[in-house]
Length: 184
Image (tube, rainbow, N blue to C red; front, side, top):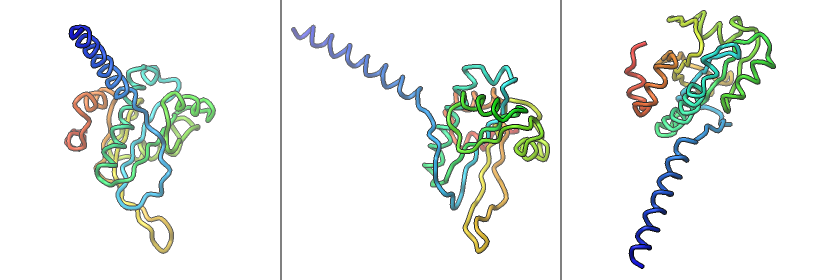
């Protein structure tokens, strides 16, 4: 009888460990609806329907894991957080459908291909241009309330990550310290 109880407890603990591990891997980002005030962490995913690596299941999962990890980092530091999806497709409908395959975003920039506002801002007018997809841009900014409405300070802690750099960061535990130490 004791042997059967021990076997049952072993089976239950293995099931619990499997369920716990599965839940940890299946965390999903839920878009936030908050008005930022203070430091905000921003993550921008740039891709396109026509981009073959953008459809790689491992890359899609890496984007989702990034959103969850950066959301947790923001919470731990008292920062607000938003994630922006950018689709470099001509058609807004195609871009929207593409981004929907990548989970939730707080904002989306879609349409006008490589000439859309996000491409202009984060690729063509950026200091270190990476004219490639997929890529992720991460930065912090300070936001406050002023007499004229919302005031945005300059962006800082700016990082551009290729997918291999993003997956490596996630594999290494996705700490803020490691991200800021990355050379790019």
